[in-house]
Image (cartoon, rainbow, N blue to C red; front, side, top):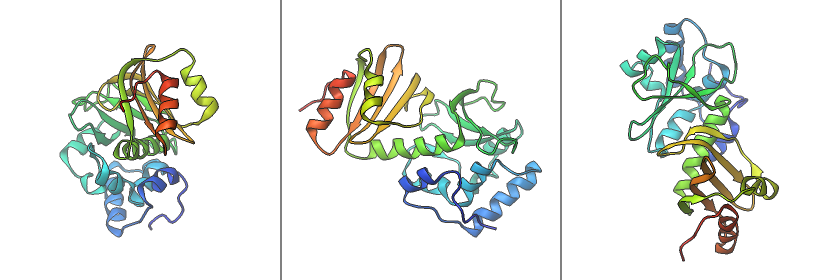
Length: 229
């Protein structure tokens, strides 16, 4: 039966333009769960039953695993190690996986080396699957919109704390910043959308979206970024 209640990933669906169950997805998921002899974690099941995979794949430059990919040899190799492959970086620099055990309904998502089928290199990327789906959708929406960005600049002391007082702190991810390793990517939303990829005391990049150039410049100054024009 196709899920009708969005219990786990509604924030991601809102960004992606909604959710829609498909009979085919339900059949493909059932086949996968038959192969692994158990249910996927509930947050993961919902994502695939309600088409989050397809909607994210349609806008992301990365290779996102869809239900029709469950039978691919690549996916099967990871399943044999107890993990479901979620996404592969567009330049094959890394992959994202989640454990297939249903012990935790909303499990963490791990970052791994691209050719590590056993997932021995895994490090925590997102604390929950729901955080992963939300940040994946939010990041694509940010960069696909009108955004001002700066790269490799100092991050003033207290900048992140200052952002927390002016904006809402969104889920933080670790280990990968779109195109390079990082300590963390911090995201904020409110009168502006701000993302800062941090390594040590520096910003690998910062990205700001806001209705006015004045607002963008104000937040750029706060994080030590330089905007052109």
